[in-house]
Length: 221
View 1: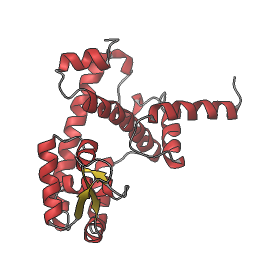
View 2: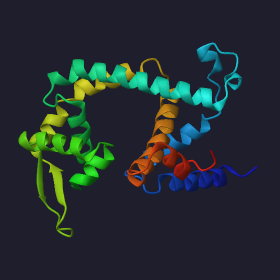
View 3: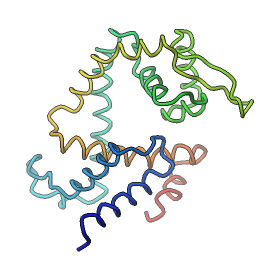
């Protein structure tokens, strides 16, 4: 068996490959989340759900169950957001996700901001217009690409974003519910892995139908 150091180096190399092309910069915290998730990948959750063995289900059934749970989870979170976010200066969860992303960058082009949030251009444009009207963001011409317009977070937007701290803390606490710290790390790692995959599909498969997407991104199927 490889030494601990060798195993750690191999895990870091795998992490870098997975991160290739992602939006987030390399960070120790991000690597720790990834590593812990890898360590818990094989941990059994059978007892937690009272099911004798997940091996009783084929991959297709498990995939359908996963999609169903993800869809339902999204509705739960949306419900919490509708209750909590209007009490802040940022009443829309979509506006919040745009602002929180700009908090991480000096600026982004409008297209980059929309794509990172997984929205159609028309939807994203409307969200940006609302944020500009509220003066939460400002826009300016891209210095290198005259066809692009960049946006950045304003001081007003930063204050508005910070006003959501209590609400988003409550929402995230409710959303993650009874998960232990280890389960939460594993969940974040799994969702991040899916997000990186679907981000690539979103960017490279805009004009493709579902069957074409499957052939392009899941050729083994």
